Length: 422
Image 1 (cartoon, rainbow, N blue to C red):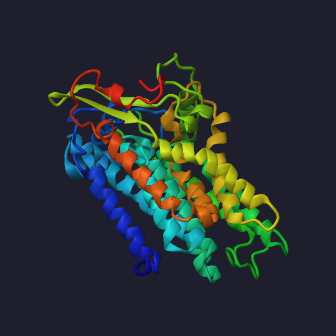
Image 2 (spheres, one colour):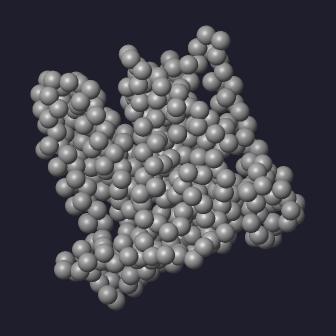
């Protein structure tokens, strides 16, 4: 790892490897898959500036799908091309976050491998859905805010802080489920300031976020994120039918909220939020004849990653909260817990495993933190064995992650570890 004594080469390496992996055969199957049936038509309507479609979600991710179609064509490759870049950005951004936390290449590379080989990132990077773009902006925002925390002068701290606010506004402009992360950022800022002592609100003489007084910094974050979010609706002002106006922009948000919170009929893939880390009910995005063969795409997490997270999170909390503990471990475990517990409060009538997409990314941080803290002595080298297992499981499940041709209609049974997975 000596050649990666600085973060940029390592981040770039993981971005390029992830993009090559995610783009491989991304056009297969050559048909709309799962929620692409909602978002690709909405993107086409945006290209034609026809009028509102799929109004329960903001515009930005659909604008990016439309841009992908404009750049690469209205076919299966064009629908998904920018999604692969978003997925590669998630991997690279996760490496950057780990570097900013631990300032060493080994845990950063460990996080990169964990995120890259966690099935959810691979699957979401190869489908034209909103979640991949939302996650890419959230991960980039976390990296920017941590970079701001590490700044050595107020000017840099402010620029990076505001960049994080812009990215959070863009994330919310993709999907509202990014909104709680704006609150998490504010709480994290106040928690670090409280730990620093010597006055919670001042920004003078601080080792973290120097020159950022709490109230102006938090107010600026909220206002910038809100302004950026509202600006993402700019294309809707040019619709041929039912264009937005300044007077209808805010009432339209209430219309979106009503669409988001309506009571939906039961669905065979629905599941409760507390089951998602256990992977009790994953989702088949595809399992049928396509392109002349039986093919499947299962939205599932890597068992070695998600189930290890159930051990790593409490270990990090214990190691972080005990006297003289490492606050970094408290932070990464707390962020993952917040990413899950928020679903207990979000007013959705139905839940699905893919709602936990961001949590499946963030769990790499407490896993890396646990190995960094406890992977010594008798456990030295076990982290490498664990990473090898993660990569091995990725290769084992790849045929039903990447829509490889299967032998027949019952081929899926080979990978069904739990009776609730089919």
